Length: 315
Image 1 (cartoon, helix red, strand yellow):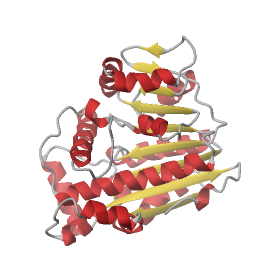
Image 2 (spheres, rainbow, N blue to C red):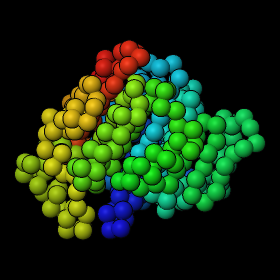
Image 3 (cartoon, one colour):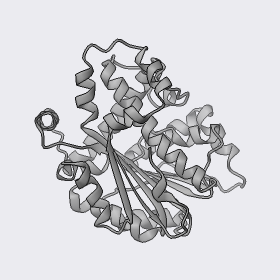
């Protein structure tokens, strides 16, 4: 239960940090205001740039997958929290066949309440639904194109059962996304989840964003700071290097795996936009930004029975 609370707090922190960064114009997200009511306390420029790199980096891979499949795919956002990707994809005409989100029932209940009570959130959902059979209760939401499920990712068989109940299609190309989620599980729990994904879908991509290089001094300080706040990273041993991140996927049935630290990703994003966001706030110490970004990574793995060329996706 303690670990669940920490994961939920991490979700809430990310939502408020995104709200603050978008208020500074790092990127546009007109929907986050309906989940994070207040802009909250000021975040340091290096934190805002870190979130910018995370959002831009993940979206780049996500959008590339959707385009590669011509939107004939499904997405499963694992530990989605108060994420707004469904609404962004609808606005940008990049809607997959179906978009699933999975999180703890308490998080799901809060999100569903916000969707029910905020017309800018509910209207796009209704617009993508063609029948009268919209399911909307306290702990689950299921429409033609969007589904939210309350489940514990550590209980893979129960999660699998719930997803299939809501028409998950193992034959469709599938993208799975997790952001700062697997690190809160033990290595065996995250391996079970990653293995389930590889076993279930013959053509798929898994994008995982979380910590890396945690065995050096900077990484150890990060871990100590979190421990002081009673937050244990149960899966930190998988976060020792880019190679250890890739190995988790290679050992569980994925054909191809790549990983980059976020400093490298930051340098590969469109540099005109990077110049724009760097002009938003003065950064006193670039070295601190560099250290921070070197301790987070994006790892992505693919299986490609349909020969779509998924292994070519990247930066």
